[in-house]
Image (tube, rainbow over all chains, first blue to last red; front, side, top):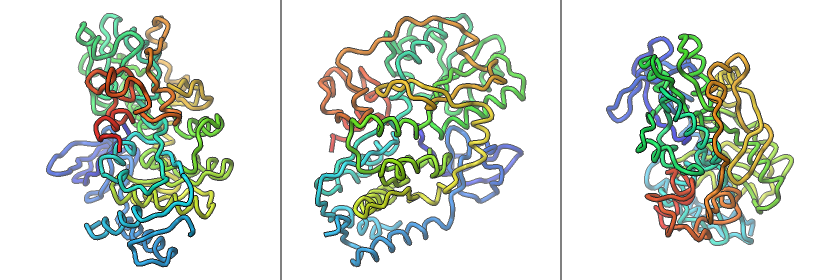
Length: 84
Length: 355
């Protein structure tokens, strides 16, 4: 039930915005995230924007993997969190 | 992430060697499904078990809630509006879907705002929205109540069945029934709550926790991060879904939620009454409370013979341990809510083969 869909903001009108994903457009409520602006990637749950997707995040995810592999001292294909 | 990145991550997970049996729990119906759908569950190393926790709002809604909804639906002029997940869930004696066949006015909506618009368009009717869901959904329902108040829409009300997830996790840990080494925390619940409400699990109970997203890479990253924290004895809450979850969550959404609702005790299927785990309308919004507007008396609730959804939601059994699974209980003809909800563990095991 907590499924949320990523969409892109196309237009903002008061407390709602037109959002688009895969060619489908629909109005969404932005009272929980009123600072959204055109071009923002957001996640929609039950007709509401619940969060903006952070454009830096992809890099952070890669950084998290880099940290993981560095800690294990491997080449990115193995892991051993059992501390063998 | 490109294919090579995913393959590298999949390799990282598959090649893990665990020294002992580990049991990790996810507390999100979407995770239940996505671990199967993406195939990540099939990459788990030996000795790792994923336990499905009470993470599906439909599954944890007790029969008496649906019994009351059905009783209210019998009041002349009432239209029940609901998310689609609830339609086929068995109540004590029936289901919303079965009642619709018998004449119940039922509207399936995508957003609680759609239910409000229905009320605005049908002033001769009373629209009752079935307000279920965790912290992700409750702010949308609160915002809808605020909109109803602002627009003066009097023929709209909600039947409160919302639940808060951290108290349920605490109740599970307090029961001591299930051995759990760490938690994969729900991504979109945490987008609202932030990390603080989960810190008790790490700090007071010594259970590492990782907030995870829903794509294959997110799930793998969540699991390997959690396994590493367990190995290092690092009892903390880590955010592995940063693109959508801020450490302090969505403050404005919580402000909207608690302007309209306040915490109350709530009855969970399988877990029973848990203090502070539900949401009730605050006094200034009582006029939108369907339970007060329609003081019906539902028949005494009853459980279905043989149904083990309660034990499943406490992490005590797997779906395949239930004698009804795949025989008397299938998605087409479900006995328990964990089979009927698309995010229920039984439905996921049935559809994806119980990897």
